[in-house]
Amino acid sequence: MTDHHDDQHDDHCDDYLDDPGSHPALRKYLAFARAPAHGQLLPRPHPRLFADYGGKRVRVVMASRLGDVGVTTDLDAELGYEERVLVRQLDNFSEDP
Image (cartoon, rainbow, N blue to C red; front, top):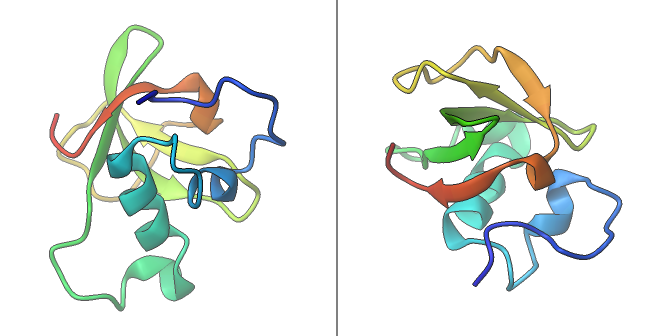
């Protein structure tokens, strides 16, 4: 199983939701984050997603309707991103830091 897409998609985060080749933690988080009201109305605990980006461990805290995701190096943060990136720029997905 790969942690990222190897083929040329249009790089929208929704492309990873139904792709069986996407990491399960990524698919679970995106299903939550792309749900109506950004999943905040769904029962807790909400899924968490961590990944490697630019040589650092980051937490994904947002998935945009524009197709990118928000990441932060604050692994305890639930909200507030430092940078917006494409999913294909991330690797080594997991539900734990």
